[in-house]
Length: 254
Image 1: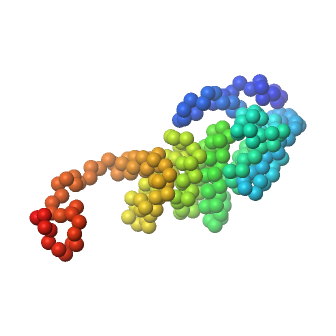
Image 2 (image 1 turned 120 degrees about the vertical axis):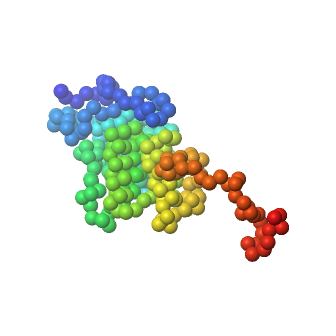
Image 3 (image 1 turned 45 degrees about the vertical axis):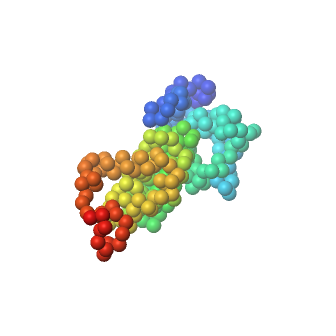
């Protein structure tokens, strides 16, 4: 079976983790597994100029191949008018993340962080985290799942975790109930509760101030992780534990 026009594809996905966005078209087969004739036909048509990041790094990619993977590139009127005459600007995205996306578009895979030297694992994990956010925007659930797995694995193997500087953009750009929100909020909760960690709740102040969702997710994660253990009842405390005076002075309230 040869290449079919994007208008004839009838395979859809709907991500039920999010609010109903309708049915979204997705690729049927991993690009690495399509017949040679189909792959060649995907590379026969026109190309699209894509500019990524503040530096406007330029890629020139095959339009039919882009449409095979995601409907995002098919509609020239999406992304609030930034697409004009075969040109798309993704200036808020990270070029390193887009590099991984390009590899997936043409090869159907990205590199495995386990095959990388230790000094490169964290940088790759960070790129995969940004790739996840990019794929969320481009409606690419298959690559999203691969990206989050590589991010988790990279964090584990590097012995590092995202800090507030990495977590805040995730909450800024992903919807409620996003799996990556669940992941990073649980990481933050574990860091706060770890007696050997230098992190405490104040470490994540910028995230708490920017997102009530982050605060709720962290508190829920702590509750779940602690087995919902009931705290001591503060109303039963005796003495002047909640009074304002120097500890060396006798309590005037008595």
